[in-house]
Image (cartoon, rainbow, N blue to C red; front, side, top):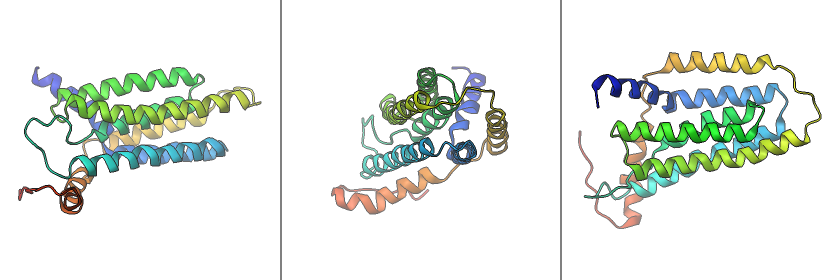
Length: 208
């Protein structure tokens, strides 16, 4: 694959780094509060915990014994899970059709996962696990959003707060783009150091 294309894929893939995702989620939650959508805010917040907490558990479990020869599933892709859920949930929450939001999230999952494989960061199995976890969160949120639409008696009017959110997300993403979160390194070390003894498997940590 040409170096220019790899660089372009890497550029777009970096928008899924945790240093960007967490501020974007903060903006999403803030807008839900401003819009007085209290019920779906708490449902969304619960799913944030489920998706990111679930990925935390998966990484700690799979990475504990270190990478073994021929192993296809070592580090489930938190990048794919986070990108899918964070941006997918925005489409579901602020779009007019919940099912269209779900399909948009599915497209994001496929693109994000393919990018991680093309960049040789994760295996196909690892991005499938991450994508599945992210899509599970989006699916549950889609059901919640559908119920919200069905029970809402308010007429749909143009909401400029969504435009403000999109502008805020764009500013945050461009400002923080390229910054790397150390979370992956910390999780791998923690898994090797504290989880591995309970798995009864030898681990050799790199000193570099």
